[in-house]
Length: 106
Image (cartoon, rainbow, N blue to C red):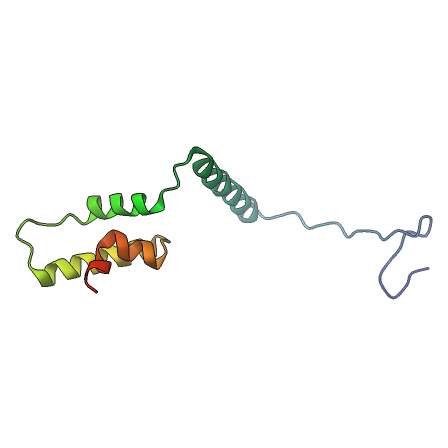
């Protein structure tokens, strides 16, 4: 007999599990990517190379170099674009502001 909770195996009284649907190729690929990203972040943390502020500063220096004779308005625009770039890449607001130099403006 089955109860209101669902089907039971009549011999043991244990619940039977519904077989899971086979994941689609896209679902399998996504699962692999998630596991690979998790492994990469764990490896970075174990090696001590998780200095995100340093990574952000390096990105800003490489992608948004300051010109020698840059005017104040151009400098502010460059720093704002650098902060936007970092935010789009997943850095937190404090790190983006510090790395781009926006904290210096007050």
